[in-house]
Amino acid sequence: MIEVKNLYKSFEDKEVLHDINAVFKDGTTNLIIGQSGSGKTVLMKNLVGLLDPTSGEVLYDGRNFVAMSKKEKVHMRREMGMIFQNAALFDSMSVLENVMFPLDMFSTMNYRERVKRAQDCLARVKLVDAQNKYPGELSGGMQKRVAIARAIVLNPKYLFCDEPNSGLDPKTSLVIDELLSGITKDFNTTTIINTHDMNSVMGIGENIVFIYKGRADWTGNSSQIISSTNKHLSDFIFASDLLKKVKEEEQREMEAHE
Image (tube, rainbow, N blue to C red; front, side, top):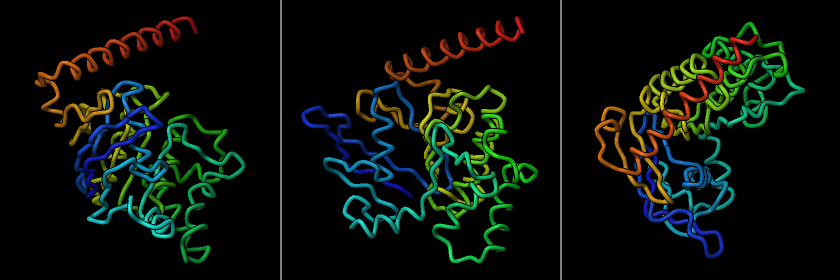
């Protein structure tokens, strides 16, 4: 479980996060949503230690990450998996080598054990047959699945995903959502996802934190979000759905002319 308590973040005289309080439980998919510039990406960076909060606490199962020494934070990060928006795979490495990379860096397994563990994770995302390919030979959705396999190869307790469905079509996005939800349940992971995708919100949003102008403006789940009377949240949902319909219409027009 991850607890955020009274978290503030400022850059010089500009306050970006104001008194954020949130609880992200084990075995649940936790979504952070909000408009661009709302502060949700800054919040994620504070959670994983890419930024230090101005004040407040980030507790990992009661351990205050903010107060840890540099050495303690390095050790702590071995319990974290991260999926970046652009997959961030190494182009010069094969799929198998990409997934093995964290094991090569941090595990004490021998080579055969590392290969077996990487292949098991690729099987989880249904990409064992692609293990000898290179990222440039894969579709965007396949690259995201490789990134998921790499993120879980060290069996992390905490999994962070930054816009995992960015640039993907709705069908592939659904596959990614189902993978992340299944991994969360099967391994009792604390999963936190930054997203704009309302399909993800409605499909796997067990705990949703809506950030508005640097504040946690609403918290709930996917069944509660529809009946919410929060105007800022309603405006965000409407804008997201409208944008999605426009993009889908553009995609249909492009396909019609191919």
